[in-house]
Image (tube, rainbow, N blue to C red; front, side, top):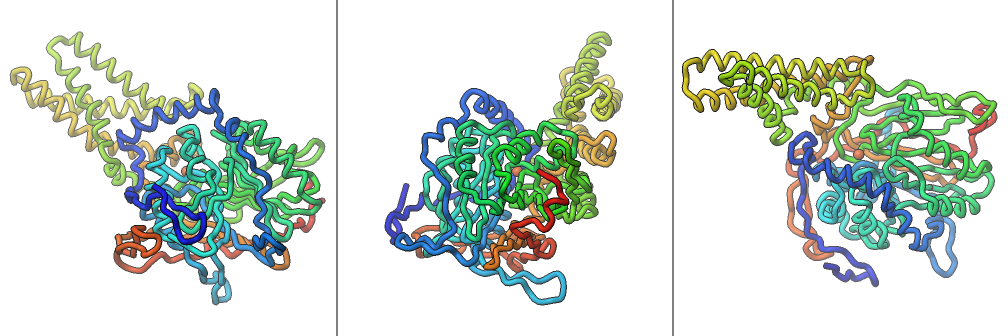
Length: 569
Ligand SMILES: [Fe+2]
């Protein structure tokens, strides 16, 4: 339902929403519901690319460089922009960030020399992807993104602007809900959506540009999008600065020897970004941490997927990236300057999975069923039957663990084989103890006792064994596996933040990386008067969000100081 607001033409969707808890990624219900959208999204990508359809929607360069006066627009003297990625998981984290973004001003303590940095809210909010978890649907967008944002900033005059790039989770319904939410030029609380397509070229003041590229599911860039950016490139003047928003940290993936992951970005940088422009900053989310790499001309490549989804590790990030050169020149080295959480903190977090594994609603049922089935199999009356059934279940357990370890080569299967074998040994041990304990009992009492007894062992010890495997697999650099599952299993919602960008009157760009170490709990506090019925929230207990700098602000000049040193891109 749409309600008219006093400002002419301004509407807002129904304000009702249900605050959702953070996603428990290893809960069987989530696992079961994730499989189909992931598979279908691949089909959507291949056979029904929505970007081809949205190309009928007219969209030229979006000019946000002026004060918007229709009679005689004046270029802005300065501009503040907020960048937030991977939000839309649990309400507490999303609302914490939305509440800080909503503040008109924000003073953050300086890390050196005392004092504070006085910052202002972005008149433009750029969303870097994954605005909803775990699946995209209109209800999920309402509950997990638009609802919390409206609650924290239901209205503002004259309003701020918002643009969004889709991440892989936004693509899980083929982009249908994303286009509804972000491409209809509607309002989300105090922010007005200004894009018509899932990608955009924004003209900023002081000869800066911000380009957001939709790479679908990390595959390729569609032809209409390439044509769109070629037209935008024609408006870029020599010496203009470009901020590129990408959906995944392809530059880090290249460092992980996934050369193909970098190919699309490399193509775009070489063929679409004009040679006479200066690509000075690349921003992305997808990995739920902060990591900043700096090139020889102080070009920045920043991952800032700290918008509230589960914390991802930083201790596996490479210290240096060697990015492909143009023909005849040397590779360009980017050096890691800062990360959040810090590497020691990131490592220290992982042992928390040993207790957090039980908070994945219903996860212990999975090893419980496996152990129970094994006990049932080996307590059969016939030795042959027991041997065959036990071998089959053991094979499934080992095979399942190998598949789970995502090993691509035979020699990489060892951790999965060891993990599966440990479960087989533990389930056989539980079955053996129960068989002896129930010797002489009648069927089906004996079988039922074996199944439920071993099932309990599996739920408790099997889950612990699984968690121990996740920790061990992450510690071994030579066989590192399942790091994403390790941190997803913990669903850590702290260590969040965003980037605040400031185009200064002198044309330089300051980047403030802002963190909030602890997410705040909220409770309803009546309704805003305007618009009617929008729920208001207050901090449940204790202090509110405490924004701080991850590192001192990074100043980027539009013109690289020594481009010749860096070679050609
Ligand atoms: Fe994400």
